[in-house]
Structure formats: structure tokens, C-alpha cells
Length: 332
Image 1: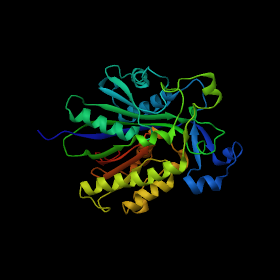
Image 2 (image 1 turned 90 degrees about the vertical axis):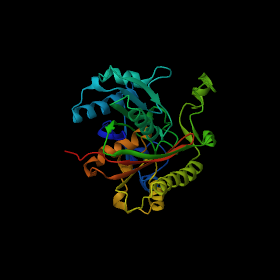
Image 3 (image 1 turned 45 degrees about the vertical axis):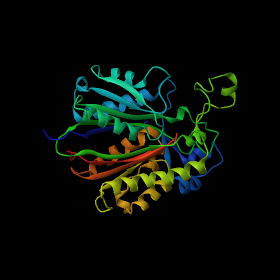
Image 4 (image 1 turned 135 degrees about the horizontal axis):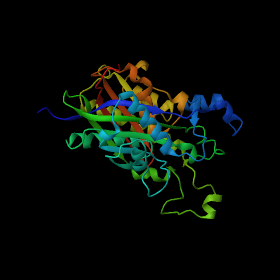
């Protein structure tokens, strides 16, 4: 029997209807379209305005989109992995709720949190389950309602983040397609530079933490940018070297959509032409765990069976890495 590899066989996505443009942000904080665009590449982001809907709503919509497009029976799904930095609530796994709501009642499910690297790490996890031979269909969802943790008076963060969700299905492959290699890393020094200070076990919620807005995401922008540029580019370069790949071998780079300058630096290190670098940051901003699957969904029509695709991400913690995957199908 040929070796089992884990291939992506279907994708789905969902973004909310409400568009938060740079022009609208100009009325909320001291910023402007030219400043935001030149520094981040973002023009607009989607926001889930319904106060009674959380990340699970986005995830369910993305999963349902995948299920409908791929025409699969949810009862056949073995595992639902929920990559998110904004679960609906603490303790109760959002993934378990999502699995039940989409009808994947034969699956077990749990959440995976590595900030903006969550989906990348989730790809590694999903592949390991498939490669074990014990599981046939693993649904990996990346979803975040970032608007729930953004302070819209903080111009350093509110311009960056948006809400959205994407999903992929991993299945066994016997043609050598799917996930080929991974280079994943982390460094706890990042704890001080990108975080939500309160709400966890270190600083539980109090009246003071709420009044001081310590439940919103904060970052030291310059430090995070420096680490992200260096490490995301390094990881991508490492994955090419380890697999004796050149820029000519790479069909597409699927990078985390945090900042266009970080993406450009990674592409430059890999010596990739612009047409091979996939970006939708202009329309969605940084949707954290959802960025990679949203890119896959938007550009699925370009992918051909056998294409070499390189994924790269960097997130809080710090967490980062790169994955080398061979695409397994042509879109019908």
C-alpha cells in the first residue's frame, strides 16, 4: 500500500456583509486612507455586527459552504478542528458546538489556539490525524470575530483586524499529493508584545480591568513587525531549502494576511514574482485564523492538481512557520 498523505479536497468560506472601510475609520479615529493603505495594504474589512452572534456563527457558515460545494455528508466527518483566537466562551469548546450545529455528530471536536498561526498549526494537526490511518475526513475551520476584542478607539489595532471564516477538508491521498513538509516554530518572548492582558488566569476579569480596557488586543507594532518579517520569511526560505525547491517550482505562496509589507518581504526572500503571491488583505484585513483558508477559497479557481503551494504565517506568542503542500484537485 502506498504511503498515506493528507490532501485538501474541498474549501469553503464566509465573511459578514458589513464593510468597514478606511473612510469609515477616518470618522472614528485619527487616521486616513492613505496612511492605512501605505502601511498595511488594507482598504476594508468585514465586521459581524450582530451582538448575539460569535465566532461559531462564522465557522458554521464557512463549514456549511464547504459541505454544500463538496456535496459531502456531515455524518462522515471524523474530526472537526476549530482554529480560533476568539472562541465563543471559555471552557466550552467552540469546535464542539460548531460540529453539532453542522450535523457532524459522529465527529469529535476541539479548539486550537496559536493566534494568527492557528490555521497553519491546524493543518499540521489535521494531516497527522489523516496520516495515522485512523481518520478519513478531518474538517479544519479557521474563524475569528476579531471585532469582539478590538478597541475601536485604538488606531494602532482597529485598522488591522476584520471578521471571517474559512474551512478545508483533509482526506487521505495515495498519489503523493497533499501536505509534504512543515517548518513550525514558537518563541515565548512574544508574550509581551502581542496580547490581551486581562481575562485569563493571570489577570482575571475585574471592574478595573474592564474600565482600563485591558480585555482588548494590544500590540507593540514595531517589534511585532520586525519579528514577523524576519521569521515568516525565514520559515518560507527554510521549507524551500529542505525540499530542494526553487522559486520556479512554487506555483503559489499563500501567506498570512497581516500586513502587505510582511507579505512582500516573504515573497522577496523566496524570489517570487508578484503573480505567484496570493493576497486579499485589501478586502478583508487581518482575520487571524481565517486568513489562510479565505485566500484558498478566493483563489481556488487558479489551483491545478500537483501545484506546489507554500503556506506561511506569523502570530502572537510568538508562533510562526511554513508548510509545503501539493494541491490535489482541479476545480470543476
